[in-house]
Each structure stands twice: as C-alpha cells, then as structure tokens.
Length: 458
Length: 119
Image (tube, rainbow over all chains, first blue to last red; front, side, top):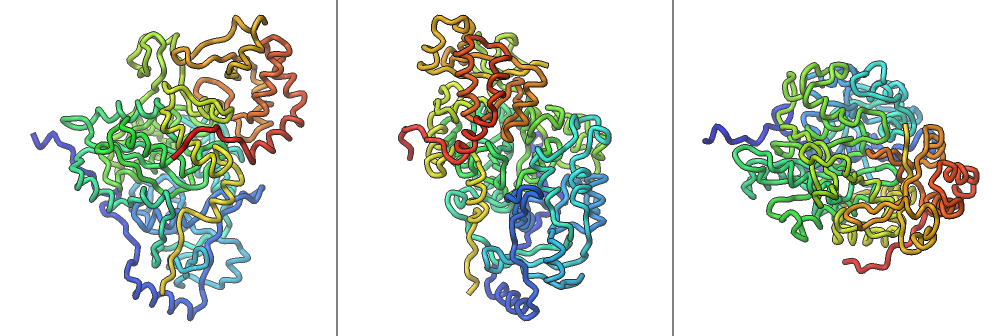
C-alpha cells in the first residue's frame, strides 16, 4: 500500500535555501563592521517608469529568497544567470526558474555608493538594518529589453502569447521600471522583520509550513494560488480539486496568497487573506483541512511563467499538488487563457520546455491539477464543472470581475456567488481604506508602511 | 467579436425601465437572484472604453468589466433615456467621456461602504 502514497516533494533544487541570521549578536557584529565601511543602501520602492507610482519593492524578493520560497535562488542574478533564465528559463545549475530576480539601482545611486565587485553592502529598510548583499558582479541592463524578453512576444512565443506586452501589463511595467545597474550576489537577512497585523498570523515560510503539515498529519496537500477574495466558484475549485490525492483525497488545502503591489481594481491584501480565512472560520471548508498563508511578491501576471513560479513556491512549501485554473495569474488578453495548462500538460518549447515541466531535467515534482471552469447552472440549480454538466447553453459564468462590479455599486453579491461572511470582510477593509479595491491611495499607504516593521537590533 | 457591458438592476432601476421596450430584455441570473441587462458592442467601442479607463478589462465571458461606477451609472441613464440596449447607448456615453472621467477620478479616491455590520 505504501508505494501508492505520495511523498512530500523535495524542495526545488534539492534543499531549502535559508539565508536568515537569527542570532542578534552575530547580526550586530555584521552591522558594526559594515558601518565602518559606510557602504549601505536604503531600499526604495521601484517607481513606474512613466507615472512615478510604486510598482514593486525589492524587499519582498529578498524575503522570498532568504526564507526559501524561491529555492534554489539565493540572491540577485548574475548576468550569466539572467541570460540563462531569459533564454532557457533555467538557472545556471539547470533548475528551472521563470523570472529574473535582480537588485537594481540607478546610475546616480551606483556612483554615490562607490561599490565594487567583492564588496558587502548593508541593505536598510525603513531606516534600519535589514539584509546584506555580497556583490559578485555589477552589470548594466536595458530595462525595456529585459521586460520584453521576460514575457516574450507573439512572434517568439507563438504557442501562447497572443498580444505584444505593453504598459497596460503590470508585470511588463515592473521589469520596464527596473533601474539599469544590477548588483548581483547572495542576500542574507540579518534582522528579521516583524509582520504587522493581519499579515503576522498568515506568515508561514517553507520550513515552518512543512513542519505544520507534519504536525497536522497532511501527507498530501494541494495548493491554491490566489490574489483575490474567494467567491463560491473559487471555493468549488478548491473543494473539487482537493478530491485528487493518492489513495484518498488530499489531506490539506494550502491557500497561498500573493502579497505585494497589485493592479488597480484588485482587492486589498488584508481583505484577501481574511476573506480566505473566513472560508474556514465559518466552516465552508473546515479549518482542519484548510490553511491560509502568503508569499511576498509583486505579481508579474505572467500566466504560464507565473504558474511555474507558483509551482516552485508551493513545492518548496511542501505541497504535493497544485491546482491551476483558467487564466491563471493573467491579466488582459496577452496570453492564451489556457497557457498554464499547455505548459503543464504539453510544454511550451519557445520558453525552453519541449515537455511538461514535470518531465524536463531540473523540473518540478509538484503535480499539477489542471482544472477548467466552475459555473452556475440554472438547470442543475448549483455550481457545476464545465466538463461535467451538459447544460452548456444555460450556464452563467461567474467571474471575479462580475463580483467586483456588484461590489463597486454597493450591491451585496447573492449568497450563491459570494459567502456573506466573505463580503463582510471586504466591507471591513473597505471601511478602513474608504475604498473596496486597490487604488493609488492604497498603494501609496501600503508601500510606505509595507507589511513589516524592522526591529531595532540593539 | 462582440463584447458585453452588463448593467445590474436594483429596484430603482427596474422601475425606471418599467413599460419600456427594454423591460422584456431583462434577464434573471444566478437562480433569479440578480437582474441584468446587456448592451452588446463591437471592437471599436470596446477599444474606446478600454482606452478611457485604466482598470477596464475583458473577462472570461467577453464582458467589459471593472469600469468606474460613474461609467456604469451613465450607461444605465442612457439606456433609460434611449429605451434601448443598442450600441448607440455606449456611444452616447463615450461622447461625454471627459465629464465621466472627472467623476471617475473622484470616485477612485472614495466609494461609500455599505452599512452592514462587520467584525
């Protein structure tokens, strides 16, 4: 029987990256020695290359690298690693990885800093020591070329890219807004940030997450990616996708929200986390089987590429399965709506995958659970799966956008499409921010406050 | 391709459409819990709406969504005025787009939350 059981997957790359110094005395020594050299840099948000509003904060990437979410990535990529990721979606070690991870600074900052290869740079956040960067290489990029090559074009990636990426695509904007000088090297966090409420109770980095699965006796766990408050369609996706497993349905459902700068019209991060929590708090999926966590990342909305990153993160967290739906982590019509499914079922040769990403060398071991759509069927009088229900012409599609439209007009969505407790969470944060969705004001407040505070080292 | 702008109807809006030719085109969706009318538009009008509003997007149902509330209100007012669900309704709204953009700009700072009890 035991040969039928799935084992918890190894972290991507073989071992979890953990680059966090927790001993305050050691951290203090680092800071003192770095203060003598005077080489320190205050982390600033990346600003939109045209409009000047925040679109990213590299601190989130440093957190996700150092706590192992992005294992085996250990820092800001060298030029050779960047080229390898852009041309083959692989690190130099051969492990697959979809996106450039870079520590970028302006030419002016570079001149002021006066750093060279081999230097150690103290990174401060909110004016306090946060991390160090051991500089292995310094090089220059062309941000527009970086943005174009990161996502591809209809000509270079005809299998899945439908439209040329432009400044309406938030992920393209993030890379286009990178500063031109890259400091490449490993990051180490020397002063652990403290999460603010409500983020504090959902923070569960990979090692702790794996321990939690052990504690709960979860052999099989299916991951649910989210950047949204859950409607009943999401709930059905989670419940039904979780019927997969090995000899029995998955023991656990791990909701892992992506927390960071989002596009206007998405829900505030605080509402996303608490709304998912409401799903288990009010018993729609019992808490013994459902756990809500997050990863810090300014979403790139790269559909198949983003799904690859999601697979890596959740494999590192210890999940055996990952559910993927239609338009996974997508925005607009840049990609085929099922580009993620194509990647995981057939592969996308132009991105470097001539086979599904589980079958290529350096690939993932987390299993995809590719799902189509859940809709409301007025004949069945319930939410149905499109590959099951035969009343196609009667279907009523449920989308996050439809619900956002109702919410904005102050119409409480019917219980058949959003749980009342979930709507209450939306309204709770709406009252706090005077707006139900992410707007410019929210982004400005959020990027100033961030999700964390930095403690004093003394 | 055809795109759809959905306008949801509460009691007030239902009354405004009572007795008009639009009344017979009102749909009930999600088990009858929501009433809606749909305006169909072509590529050109869809493009103009997406250009006008940064948040606007096309969802999986080919609906133009995430437009400002001011735009949706204007579309409804125009439907009630023209007593029609023709594309001309949206064209008439686009003709006064600057006025709607001004309203939308204010609305992007503040929307009143519904008066329901929260934790």
